[in-house]
Each structure stands twice: as C-alpha cells, then as structure tokens.
Image (tube, helix red, strand yellow):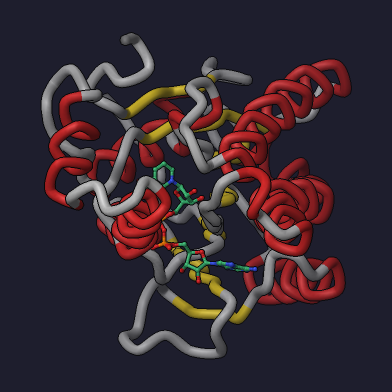
Length: 259
Ligand SMILES: NC(=O)c1ccc[n+]([C@@H]2O[C@H](COP(=O)([O-])OP(=O)(O)OC[C@H]3O[C@@H](n4cnc5c(N)ncnc54)[C@H](O)[C@@H]3O)[C@@H](O)[C@H]2O)c1
C-alpha cells in the first residue's frame, strides 16, 4: 500500500500528550514534516520537526500560526485536531466553567482549526493524491455515554457531527480536502488515570483496580488501546491510501463501540 506521505506538512494540536506524541513519531517515520503544537511554550523533550505554542481556544493564535505555516512551508497537507480535556464529575456538581472549558477546548478548538486551516489546505490539496486530510480525534464517548462524563461525551458527540457536517460541506464546495474523525477506546494516559481516580472517589471508593478490570472487559478484545494503534490509523487517513475515505468515523477500540 502506497502511503505517499513524503514531503507532506502536518500540523497537530495537543502534541505533547500521550496520543499526540505517538502520532508525531508515526508521521515522522513516514517522512512528514510535523509541526507539533501544544498549550505550553516548550515541551520537556524536543518533538516533531518543529514545535510551536498554540492554545486551540484562541482564534488569534490560530490565525498567527496558519500565517506562519504559509510563510515557512507554503503548504498544509494534514491537520490533526487532537487537543482535548476530560473533566469528570456528577452532573449536578460540575461547574458551568468546567462544562464550558471542555466544550471550548474539545469543540471550539476544532472549529477554529477547520476555519483557519481550510484555505491553505485547499491550495495544497490538488498537489497530493487524495487531497489534504483533516483528522479530528473524537472518542468512543461520542457514541457511548459514560457516567460522570456528561461534558466530555457531549463534546465528543459534537466533534463527530462537526466532522460529518464539514465533510458534506467541503464536498459540496468541491474542496480537495477530506475530513474524518477517529474514535479511540481507552488509551492509558495521565488523563485517563485521573478519570479513574475521580470515578473511584465519586462512587465512594470503588477500588481503582476493579475499575480498570471492568473498563478493559468493556473492550471485547480485552485490553486498553495503545497510542501507536491510534497513530497508525491517523497515518492511514492522512495518506493517499485513504483517498476516498471522507466524513467517516474510524473506531480503534478492540470492539468497544460494537458491544
Ligand atoms: N486517553 C484516552 O483514553 C482517550 C480515548 C479517546 C479519545 N481520546 C482523545 O485523544 C486526544 C488526546 O488525548 P490523550 O489521551 O493523549 O490526553 P493527554 O492529556 O495526554 O493529551 C492532551 C493534550 O491536549 C493539550 N491541551 C489541553 N488543552 C489545550 C489547549 N487549550 N490548547 C492546546 N492544547 C491543549 C494538553 O496539554 C495535552 O498535551 C484527546 O482529544 C482525547 O479526548 C483519549
């Protein structure tokens, strides 16, 4: 299978996180120039081909970043909207500020990425097989509700619909840009361990080990997802091999969504 990714330029948000790092490395191995971004000014270890600070909730920051990518690279082949947070609480205990922050980062952040990257990606699309590619990192939570995760599940369902809407709209407008969402099951990360701890607290001290065992059992293949497994699907969607995959939701979850 021909991936056709050499000489491509990719931008990824939330790049220093667990899944983000794996995606940067996987794209790097394919010869992609990876512009890694995250909210902090500089990561502890170097990553991607270059690193830039980006708070995905800032429209000005998106505008400045895309202008810099245009000036420096004159193309943008791949955009991976990966930044996300997952606040957890009983619905009646969740503050409006936490609810809004989740929607602002997880949904508005992707809207701003689409809005400001699309022109440059339209210019780049005709230069590559399968056009430019946008990949939004959603979650199994887009389809399946989870207790104490109302803000997160709602935000990820919105990411799925935003992806589908953009796909239909870009097609209607004849844009050479594909857009898809990927839906990982549970990937063990700092973010997820914090969720499990909080779940344990809210449920009056359910042992964390029991929670992990139950969550793994929810994945029919019986284990958590590895970040590299998400990255491999992202590489496929970014490539010419996925040239007719558009508006889709790809699950990487050992069957979690199927059950
Ligand atoms: N870990 C899982 O089990 C899991 C499962 C399904 C989907 N996801 C999704 O995958 C994506 C990556 O998650 P992860 O597991 O690597 O978590 P992570 O916490 O390791 O990474 C998230 C990254 O987003 C960044 N971020 C937060 N707010 C930001 C902002 N305003 N601007 C820019 N960056 C910001 C953080 O700094 C962090 O580097 C998220 O969208 C998450 O919802 C995770």
